[in-house]
Length: 123
Length: 114
Image (cartoon, rainbow over all chains, first blue to last red):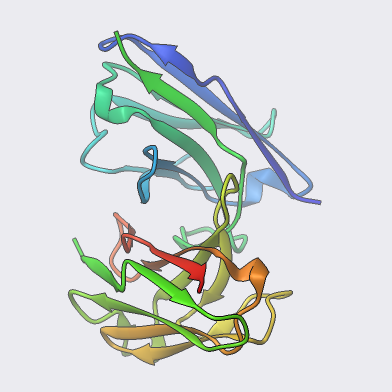
C-alpha cells in the first residue's frame, strides 16, 4: 500500500534552517509529481511547493519563494524540502502529498498524504 | 490567484440528516475545452491528513461512500452528505486546481453532530 513518511521536523530558531524528508513506498515514486502542503496550528491548508516526477520543474508559493527549495532523489524514493531563513509564520505541520496520476505534467490534485511533520519556529 | 471561499465556517447537523457545504471561487474553474471543473473536496478528521473525496467537482474517489456527492459548475459548488453519520465529523476543504500555481484551498468547514 502507498506510504508517505515525513521526518525532519522540530523546534528551530527564527533565521535558521531545517530540511524535511518524505520517504515514499508502495508506488513508483519516480513516476509521480510530489508536493509539500502545510497547515499552521488550528488553521487551513496552504500549498507550499511542487516538483515534477523527474525533478526538472519546481514551483513555489510566494510566501516561501527564495527561502525554500524542493528536491527529490528518485533512487532513494525520497522528497525533500530545504527550509532556510525560517520565520515564526512558517510554524506548521508539513505534509508531503502524492499526485493522483503518473504524468509528465503536474495534475495539482492529491490522492495520498503523509501524516505530516511539525515544524515550530520559535526563539 | 483564485480565491476560494467556503460557507458556512461551521455546521451542526443531526445524525441521518443532510449536510451541505458550499464553495465559491473568485473566477470560473470550468475548462471549456474538456468541460471539466477543476474543483476537489477533501475531508480531514482530527489528527489525520486530508483525504481526497471528490475530484472534477462531482467524481467520487474509489471507496468513498455514496452518501457523499459533489455538484456545481463554473464558480459555485457544493458538497452534500445525504445522511450524516457519526464518522463524518471532520473539517472539509475545497480546492481549485484550474489556475496553477498556486493551487488554493477554501478556509475549511467544520462539520459537527447536532
